[in-house]
Image 1 (tube, one colour):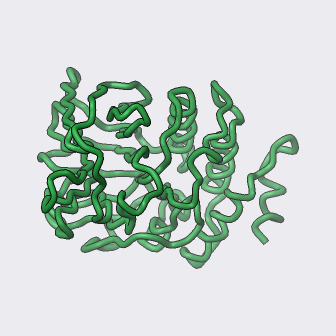
Image 2 (cartoon, rainbow, N blue to C red; image 1 turned 45 degrees about the vertical axis):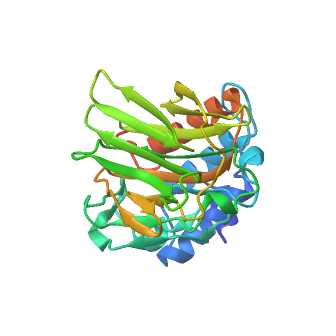
Image 3 (cartoon, rainbow, N blue to C red; image 1 turned 90 degrees about the vertical axis):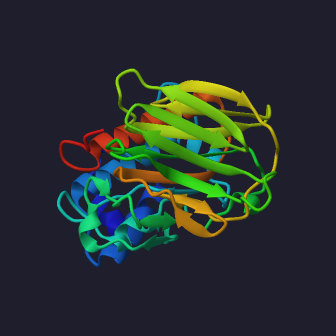
Length: 287
């Protein structure tokens, strides 16, 4: 049993949260083999942090985001050298296989993340914003690399009814463009890099804003309140059910439909995810 193995891998004053244990079991089923000690400890440490331990503000982020609708893919490899579509398809909050990788091949899945081609490969989350109980939610990803060419890293757009929403991140080597509910933000990054943790949110104050590596960048008023009824795609945009505007950056986490949380809770969320990315493989992902 996984719980028995973990007894010998976690210090005596720590416990592995049941949510992490369930996720580890799901990953081992998907991989058809045990996952490595490094990966087990990374998941245990991540969920401890998401539950308010070892973060600056002690927010129980897991309780705040785990509403039964939110989805988060952590891209946990089997070990330091093996990753597959089946393993990366496991969604962390439900510990089940959710979403669909389209047009990828086995070599696109590495311990560092998922590598698209900027031409045809995308991930369908299976979750449309219009299906959520609230419009106040968060979407984003963790990226290891910049786009070589302009592309949309996540998006859904009901273009038939312009009052609906599309949420996307469009990147070039030196700028980020965010759209949410027809609001538009442009961030010029002076160092010419946009790899890292990117979050796009709509707040109960009827504003949209973006965060880059835990720092709030732009705040804009919303022009409408509609929600797209098309599924959120990653590595591309879902425009009326058709994938396009593909990106070529390597992503090592996706999340969509997370309920809006406070600025202090978002800071703890970023700390937890950064720690995970630095520990999920030996030496950490280069994030």
